[in-house]
Length: 110
Image (cartoon, rainbow, N blue to C red; front, side, top):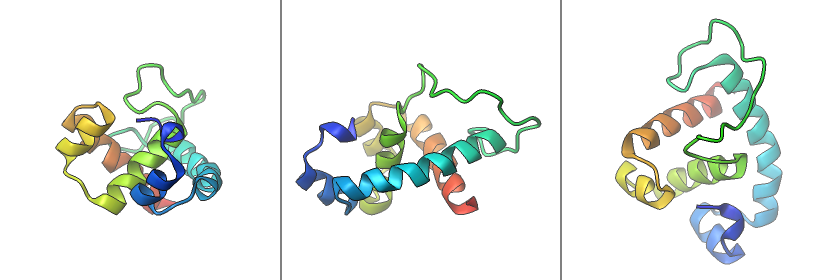
């Protein structure tokens, strides 16, 4: 699911944010995400050494910061099951669980 392809009305319905608000939040979220990724693994464990190079890996199940932000906002607002999130974002339930844990941990620790 690409948030940029969603209409403004539907985006607001799914996240309670306008496109402008989402863009503003992307900058803050990007900073928090990068900080968390440098310090923690996707399993939430502290890294022994901070990452030197941060890439949004080509094989990442959630591509792009806007998709990750939409993923967490949608899950917080709608509270769908992990199976539903997996179907919506075309990822497995185990990946949904991993992303939810990492993104929520990143949010709450910063």
